Image (cartoon, rainbow, N blue to C red; front, side, top):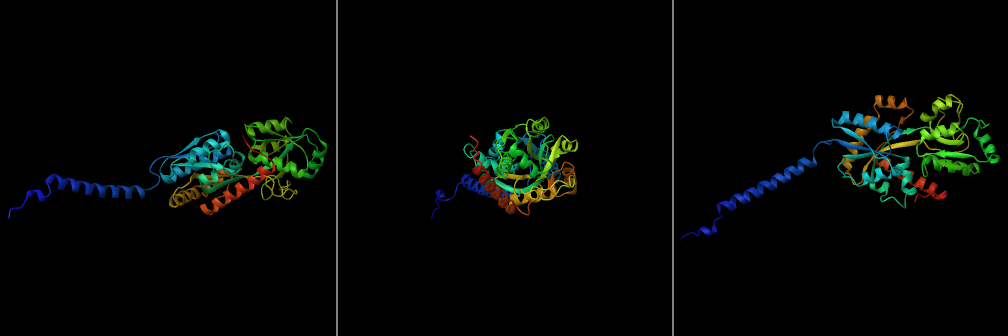
Length: 338
């Protein structure tokens, strides 16, 4: 019986099917290769929510240098100043979750901003950013103008109750020095005017020396030269223990103001929904960089101290606790940014 050639596959159809089959295997192989490729394969962008020169920028550049060396891929610092850190926060929240966009944030951007800018911020940092690890803490001091005739906080309280026109400085409305100053005034039972300086320490220090403002809480690194030359007078340190540089100056707790005063922290963040494996890999690399003796020695010279998290999960809890704490402070002082 004759065989109908119409029942046999045509040559072109056979090759077409074979081509599709090979292509499918190729796609599977490519997808597997992409999912298991070494990270990073290209430059990583490390966003800083302020301009160059401040503590957060210093820490980010030191970290970027060591990560570049460890990874063999460049880590580029990208300063995204503006909006009290909201511009940087939103850019990271909307970035790809592939780990090529990270951010060095701090207590202001990643704890206070969430509540202070709740009406205008399009994201929720604790939800839309992945908390990877803490990096550093910076000791702060409660300082007064040298002309004020007191030497202890107790004397300062009595002086403030009778003085008029006292003002305290901060780096801006909603910043932690603003909130700390408001809390201190409330506990002291005195009225003080808040004067914000967008230029940070660069403007606050001259204003303090000239007696334009009389009180501030500011990082020790910025204040140290002016304390030593007698232009500013230290009242207490926000550090858990007395500073070796000023052994006679009490802690805020010793002075009777437990819980008031902030040691600014910086941490490493990325977009939310990064894979746990990628977060753990970046965490391990960051810990290796931060805990190196060269990093600790370099930062300590600038009175910046390495304080890292035991795990990403521990840091998530820490940041959430900070958000809750500062949210309560903001509500109690009726501080909302429009």
